[in-house]
Picture: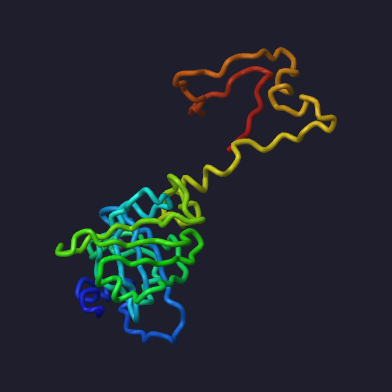
Length: 248
Ligand code: MN
């Protein structure tokens, strides 16, 4: 294992990715990291520390917590350990150009000999991350491809969850600059909560309170598309007592 392929693909005067010439520190537990990479094709990068490098797989759809789902994981070049801390933008036009954000990280372990399991094409391992936990498998499906293809599969255990995808767990991943994170904005309530009536009657419900207003009547919500009421530019102010004016 070496970082030759990693370095050959990159120009370190153009990208902020680490060169990987820092030494390997101590004998701490092996780390893992999963990064969401908005490259020309969006994918997740799945990296496990083996010895002094991060063995790496590109997982187009990301890990799934559903044990019945097999996720294609294409083996790519080893990355330096400090790549686990890399977040930010790789310049467009360069290898892997696009935004990188950390999805999850932590430590991992395996009961068996890791190198031997990788050579045999079936690694059984356990993740200790914030989002990804419990037992997993990496199983090689095509030995002789230029980029060997593996399957990343969640083992059936207490951390498995049917139909739960990496994309479902994205709420805490920072969106790219200028981008939006729908998971985060969707959590804001559309309206401030209405204070409940103390007596516990329906008076605390906004619809009941609205209907209690003079001339209020019940009406079904519009079903089809409708045009929102938008502000328009005008050259004169409307007449009448019913208007308030504010000068900008
Ligand atoms: Mn990538």
